[in-house]
Length: 479
Image (cartoon, rainbow, N blue to C red; front, side, top):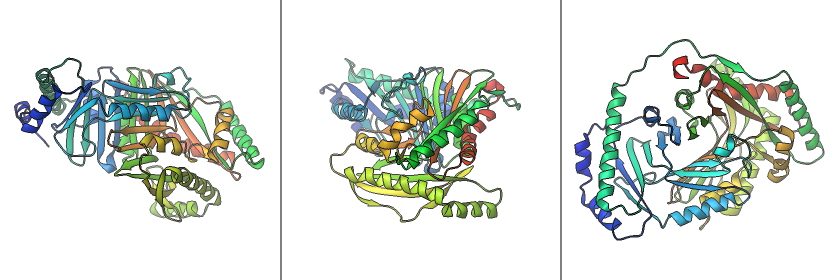
């Protein structure tokens, strides 16, 4: 643990490199300033809970990959809607490269300003609550705590305006001292917890199951008519708690229970959040390479090692699941071939095991063509057949018509990127939209010609479990 005092941190700011950076600010036309420095060991999520001042906030973690990000405030907002939203975000990003002056005390690909956010599933967001998230929205936060591979970094970003180097220096000292004091407060903070679970009330009707069966049969009828080969249909589950749900508590439960997943929390305002623990990576971008994966075909985990292995073998031999997975891999290949080269992946899928399910899994890697931007690739990859269908365009147009569900950001790309071409995005499944004391959970299934409505219904119940478990873990004094 880094236990340096505020005075020692302030002294570290007097290095020649940082002094030169500050001096250069008086002579350039940068509109924004970003400064990244090492900071005391602070759990980013704990810091977010302790600050909790109602401002816009973001959390992202993958415990197995040793990354955790917490951020707050909104200094710069990139926003767009409609068919051109991916191109718009790429263009806005390119412009910012010339107006942000960044200093990092540590050389790391994630040191410096990161833009956090995501996209909606469809080109437009029309739902009352989902409108707060936009159809494409990324934020450069005012502060960001990053824990990665043993590093603990604090990034502070400012609007330069007419601020002098001396004023910025004093602002940095003030905010670093605040976070160092926060670390001390975290070490001394203790909260009593009651043991009884909070009461949750399901707001579903008996007609929901019948409607789901009808939707599956409608999709299978369209498959027989040759409209598409696979479609992913989703449904929602509405819950109500006794009092307001605190999203950071859900994130704490999810990251501990699902360390192999991407855990995310996006909160545009005090009362509204989108929370999840998704097993599916959309794409990672690093050193001119893109890594993605086919993740489709699902079966439960076993109660014993023998049962678990037997279920895994059953999944690998399931024609229905293998067919569903094949569509996903083929579509990803088609999407990547336009913007990348040297695509590599195993011929046969393996098994990827999570806490409550196991999936067919194929890792895919490709070299990005020169000049291609992150958001160009996201546009081509989204939606994958694991959340959309195959062929992409033909199936996509039927999803809302059959579901009659406002997906919002469910099953859409969420994540982060920087101005050097690095980034990581996950597909926002195993997720819930929270507003005050209500939660809407989402789950979907890939429908092919051999799908059985009862089997698909049970699969959605399996996929609701992560968020149901997290909600049931909350104690009344925390809700």
